[in-house]
Image (cartoon, rainbow, N blue to C red; front, side):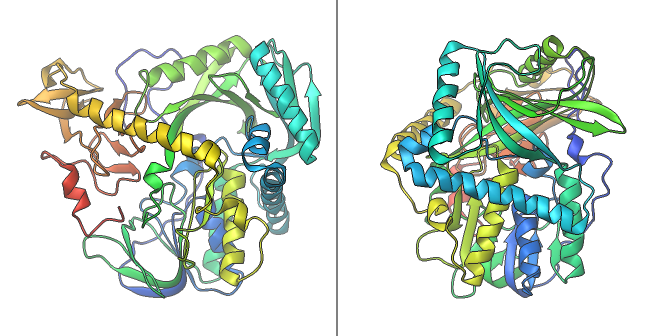
Amino acid sequence: MVTQNNENGKLPPHTESYWRTDIKFPEFPGLAEDIHVDVVIVGAGITGITAAYLLVNEGLKVAVIEGGKVLNGTTGHTTAKITAQHDLIYDEFIHNIGRSNARLYYEANIQALNFIKETVDQHTIDCDFSTQDAYIYATSDKYARKVEKEAEAYEKIGIEGGLVDSIPFDIDIKKALVMKNQAQFHPTKYLVHLIQLITEKGGLIFENTTAVNIETGEQPVVLTGEGGPSITANHVLSCSHFPFYEGLGLYSTRMHADRSYALAVKANKKYPGGIYISADKPTRSLRSVTVNGEEIVLIVGENHKTGQGIETMEHYKALETFGEEVFGLEKVVYRWSAQDLTTLDKLPYIGELTSGQPNILIATGFRKWGMSNGTAAALLFRDIILGKENIFRKLYTPSRFYAHPSLKNFLVENANVVGQLIKGKLDTPKTTPEDLSKGEGAVITLDGHRKGAYKDDKGKLHIVDTTCTHIGCEVEWNNGDCTWDCPCHGSRFSYTGEVIEGPAEKPLQKYDYKMIDNLTSEDSGY
């Protein structure tokens, strides 16, 4: 267990997601030999597990592989709202991609919500599913005008909802917009049940099996690295958070990674029901859960680009302060963080990896709304593989391009990457290993080289090279989660250098790592 050495008020000393507690997760072996299946799915989160469930029900032979443990990625660190209210998005979509496409996006997410509800009902899944109205609220005149524009967009595309002047919290708002009949649930309880159904129908699941590359062809082959076993299939579904294989899709240049933070708190005031998100920034998102008969409030927000910005512990403290002001906090039970990817036009990429590769499909860029978008992706995957028409296929296709805002955002995001790359290379930290206290990490200078160091509770130093093994940017220390985070494409590593989150596939090295080391490796999808 990793702890921080700073004083943090009511905040727990270590991070732990509520969705990962008190759940008996099934365990699966690693892939031990080459196999051949109809469909191989890379990634055991909501997209991959839902897709496997749908495809085994169609009689297909399916294998799911996961680099770590099932449901331990973004799905295990979500807010678990199931809604089509994805912040202020529909007015923007109408202007950028057209009214009909904005309506299609809404329909796809409502279809996903209804699918989850029907699946819960069909299998009597105990996962705390409940219907809730969803609200987006503004506390300033600037964002009140944006909420009013969003309400006009709702009317244009036929979304049930409307403007309200108050919400049942001690928050002085200017305006709020409600979307009726949305939902929330316990995601890991739901997906553990689907995993059981998958294995009962012969689906294969392998943990601790990292996919690193694909040999393309009529029957693509997923390679698992270091000469490990491979999987040959008719279709490959890339459901890892960041695509483990980019091909010529250049996804590293077409998305950016954001981190956000969550507290599960025992409050002094009763939660009034509903799910909420602020239009103003920094974001504040609210919902409740019941833990051992007690009501717990989830407070989420404070998003920023991964590896950039202020000390990350400050984000947890800001949420704690907000919770204290609105609810009065008796106790902070859990804290954790999550990572999400945003595409150039804010629509997920779901479909063929690149035009003309119908047997390699990807789903990525859910922009914090993975419960509905991930389910929508699985439903679309099923129809593509079965050769069925799907009205959402063109909307989500990764090969799409809207001149506005895609071109502008492409230039902005990649200028940011270049800036971060140069900044990291020029950084000459003055901190030395002797400056670190127990439970503290930092970028240091060691023998004239830039290194990363963490001193654990026993005083042992853990030294890593700070060059990210994706494309060579320099990672920064995340003191809130005790991780090394890359500011370019969002790769994250443990304090010992092990990969927590891609696109990096290899751990941080102990020697002086160079970008060319990865670019010249055959054992990489980049």
